[in-house]
Length: 76
Length: 378
Image (cartoon, rainbow over all chains, first blue to last red; front, side):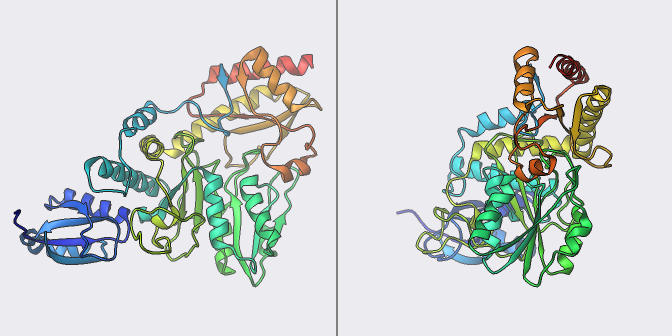
């Protein structure tokens, strides 16, 4: 059985916001990637940004300035 | 062949436009998945929003939604914004893409004021100030006439409209790509544009900019790729105004075209086009039988020269230019019925020469010679 690990998952109101997040993260070399929005997140568009807990802690300040709907800790 | 029907559509595009369209044919469906092809499409679409926002001076790329042309964008604006109990001001210079959506609303009860234009087809800005009512919701107006090339002073109109609590909705079909547009500086609340004319993008592309804070009912609802269990379409822009699969190959072409415009400079392109129009005007100025339509003394105008040879049917003149000289121009009514009523050309129509960035002086001189020939022989 595949092992799950903890990620921080950002949800967005539109695809445009999700792609904007990816672009900003790529520019700042913030590790993570876009994934289909997990079922635990009830609101938001079909794309979510997933990053490790460690990266989230590292970039928390920059991430707070970005446009997203919610951020949730999930086992994925 | 010499092509001077660029106000209808430009046929010569920067090479990057076609390449982008072809490359995007293998893109996935934007916003419909998180796999590579779908994300590639979403990235192209977002990049296009960013470039268009830069081109039009909009701060937030998500305030740009795509449409298939300016007509669709104007329908989105008129139907999303205007209710039966409001009043709207427009002018007799408008294209049917403005008039018909407004007429439809008028039929449903909305009050509509159509300001007359003078013999040069120009609407005086002063007329507007006397036309506002308590319930005036918007001034809906073209930035430039497709028939005369006359340009409206948007900054003046927006300040007037905003003082009266109304919005400024702009049809930029003829100016996006050849005249500088800055939605912030010019106070434009809603901008409707097309991609295939001066922007030099593919046909079937265009869009709408909606200022932050303006709420609009979507004209079209349906697939959004998310919120699938809601009975309502998402309300956030741009998704709110983009139901169904986007035209990603077209948008990719528009993205490339916008990049070309940003790199080259809209002012540079517009200046070059007007130089060609001015050269044409200069060369035909000595022909006695030519009647011009439009205000050619105005400082700012688009690269359009509209004319007739006495009372000759514009269709005959255009057909002879094509058949005997291989010159493409537009004849007829140009979807501007009220302007033709003003000019007295409802039957005759008008012959329009419209110039693009890719036209040459040699082509202009050949067209002027052809027109001289026709003026002498008809």
